[in-house]
Image (cartoon, rainbow, N blue to C red; front, side):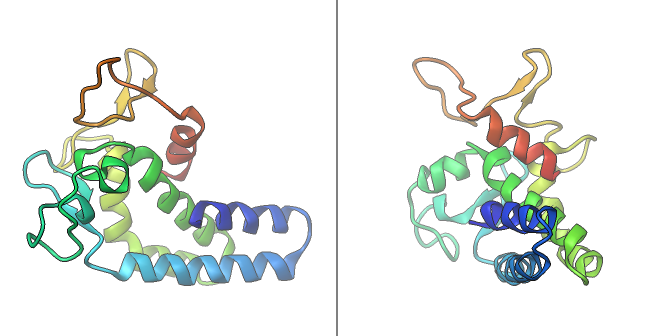
Length: 168
């Protein structure tokens, strides 16, 4: 939803529909701010490093846990992070560029956004694996995280991957 709303804000602005663009970017900022302000959605994975959706954590281990490691498309198993977290990065970049208070909002959100973006697009040695999803040899990202499928790794959506890196 955030990715679509960000794209709508940009399309409206490009079409000269400034009232609609302002409405879309204001709604986007409010929704993104609400999500980024929650402390029960994403946690830090102590084993592999980086961010992971708490929905996939064992039951009663933390707020928001479902006990299903495949919840949120296997996010707790590091599947699809460049897709899922990329939408938040793209939405934040749109707010930063189009909202009157965008730069200030981006700075307020920076700790949570950095955790999401560095999880899939870290460019230096840190507490996050460098380029966790990007395979520089094959020239694309892998979507399947820690899960091994019979058919091997996959990159099921190159457009979502590109979108995630654009947001970063």
